[in-house]
Amino acid sequence: MPASFDRFYAETYGALAGYALSLVGDRPTADDLAQEAMVRVYARWPLLRDARPYAFRTVTNLARDRWRRRQTELRAQPDLLARPVPAPDRTVLDAVERLPPGLRDVVLLHYYADLPLEQVARALRRPVGTVKRRLHEARALLARTLQDPA
Picture 1 (spheres, helix red, strand yellow):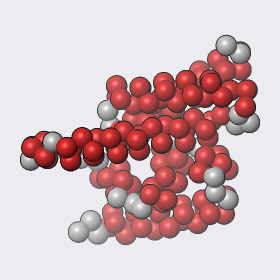
Picture 2 (cartoon, helix red, strand yellow):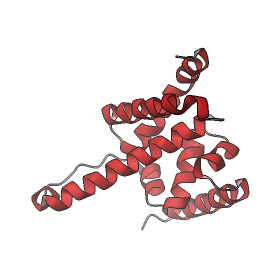
Picture 3 (cartoon, helix red, strand yellow):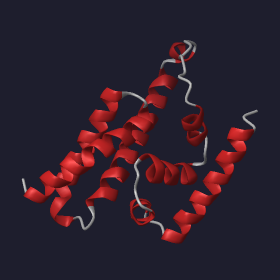
Picture 4 (cartoon, rainbow, N blue to C red):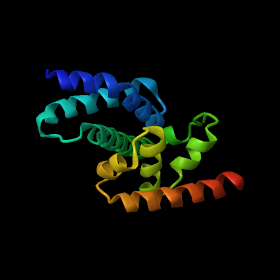
């Protein structure tokens, strides 16, 4: 293992696992997603110019795959849908989760993963100006949603 990957892992894993936790809400699953992302970063290490955005994009994609798989499983077993699922009081995160995907991704990467705008832009493969505009739109929508939750 190259020394630079060791340093990258030590500096990034905590933030990556925290970001994964904000996406899935379950510590063991979040740790699994973060570890899988790190494995994928390591596999591409010599090819990556900036591994941090790649790692966060990978966690986002892994979480989306998990959500899709879960939805498929739930549709396959309708009796599971009838069971009530207790929801924690997560007002802001719930509002963020209701944002359109393009806005939600920018908010999660910038505020929850604590990536600078340039890295968010690289992770989403969008221009920095687009990321700024989406962040502005997301903030405005969140402000309206949180002031008037009805």
